Image (cartoon, rainbow, N blue to C red; front, side, top):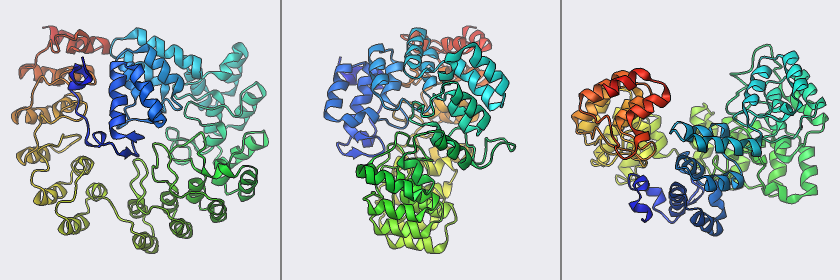
Length: 543
């Protein structure tokens, strides 16, 4: 059986950008190669994956819309492939401790146990790590001391994100706990699975935002104090961190010793930390930026999964650092560079109320908002001008998703004036306004259009318990028993998995097959309801 005949793949649709042999910067590989990696992970073809990696080693980082080969290998129960990917993938996701749930929720407990064993071997992720995290967040030093005294090995235990006790002590800025842990053997340079060391986390991370949201008001408010403490205690003080703090002397010292560092990424790259030039630019350290550029730093240096065309200019604009932005542009920074989930440079400038001179500077160098961003921000005036000059301009699916997801009906009307068939192949994602949804279907949107995984609007409505939207989908001809590729389930299965009893009753009343898919018992609605603990839905389905 070839891949296209495999039922797990035939339900899927190869996305447009994965039909291309061109390099796809957001997906980290040629489009067709990324598709082969994902489908080979589904079929468990380790030999093919190794061949692909020989040709394109960077495919080890590849993904598509947050789906990685490792996800599919776990989902489809390929232990040999899972072990290969986990041991060779530099960064196994931001929350690797959740990986076993991919198998467990599908009833594959052997695979879940296998992944848990690997995570413990590789990263010391274990349940005790969660207890440690909770104790430290509560600031309970006596309880922590007791735990470590009773079981010294806990000093290395990590939670599901890979945070060890020392990471949590730094995230929460508790110097007494940091001191205790270091005195009892904690590694001051311990790395999480995503590469972060304690010194990288003094101002929080994506999940623990200590600079504005998660840090208790009575906690230490200046994270630089923690950074200085760690550096004085011997933490590795690398180029990325030195640039972030504007320590131009340290930056010069490091580059004098190893000039190649200026074009290397640190081990930890995230929204809030990464390439030295981005760190310095975002913090407004002009002298540091000047030195880095003099030594050959590239404003467009790609940062995996975050900024394929560099993030330094984007960061400078977010901080309204006009002189730095100008310097970066003069050194060739891409004025349209985008950052993951954060728009491009021009949208950043407008969203962060940048002064007119900064917006004009960007425009002078060719900076502009994309069609997707204009749709997202409901910018009818600019959209109209764009399509008047080029009525056949390509409208990516993401642009329609943005307009629909934000409820911008007038934007969609404008797009349809220039491209009347635009909705006919589009798959409806998130929508909250039922009247807007009806208008979309009246104007050509087919509720049987599925996304690349085969997920239809009816699946989503069922999962959310949105009976009104489900009824609308059925009114316009939705297949009530459509099966998608990720959970291999019908809309009724999705309702059962999410505990949506009223939706399940509605779909049954409308004729949904309670036993579909007949050839995959674990994916049937009753099996989902039973595994998830929804006994009332089990009884409803078996009635």
